Image (cartoon, rainbow, N blue to C red; front, side, top):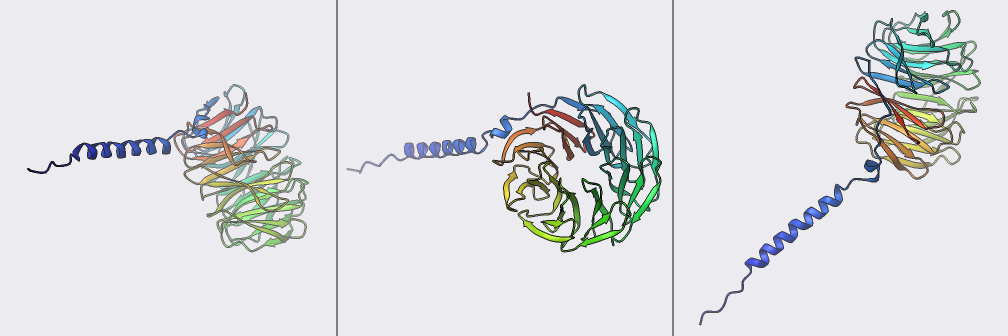
Length: 376
């Protein structure tokens, strides 16, 4: 009698089905929407009108207006309440790199690739003065806290101080060996700081233009510089992946903060002076405790470089903008995403928060700016 063969065909089919089911379950778990994706919010206003990439976006001091700077050679003033265009600032011959309001909100400053800066009346958009003298394109410009001076930073290796009332040059800050990437004033207005691709930052007497300190130690381009709210500390971020803290009164190094895996692109202090936030090309932002020098949280979730960062006055909330075309609003205490701001079609280059962190503004290479309500 022939032995009866064991029927294994059915078991094999069942095993195969079970394996496929397991793959499906694992895939569903892996691609399950995250809390951040579920918390995505829509823009309150889409600010359309520019015809090229946007480079910068900033609120007015009272939060009622917004200014955008574009490669289309113009800046535009918008109402944050209605989203309507208030004025278009035309006159530059090349694209803009930066635009900001004066501390009073009555004057606007624009910086352009054409090598000039311009001052405008913020209520009408009328040109007040053209600041000419740099030999190459501008990278940055900033108002003095008093609103009576402005500083410009250029690829010609210099920064310049100008009188706002008459547009006249006050002095040239010479000494860097390469492009000046950023410029900032201390809160009391006594000092100015510059960041350069020559791997140094410098501190200057803002009243006379006299060089005070050269800050050396970075191993790459110094992309960003910022004073603490009390003016005693200066922070610099570099392509060498390091954040350095300096005594602004003595020019001595206080600390080197390591944590980013690629270059540090932006640095900003919270208004209470307890925290610092950095944005990096490593696709993350870090919130630092200035009391300990340690990270409070590492903000991960973006898929491409984080180009800009803003922080609430108490340091508890952070806004980041990335080349992955999204912005994220974060709980800085726990390192968790509160909301993902989706809608831009191209890279986000600049972000801004209003004073109480209830509204976010984003500027993108898609030529659009967007306003987002972060609180009901």
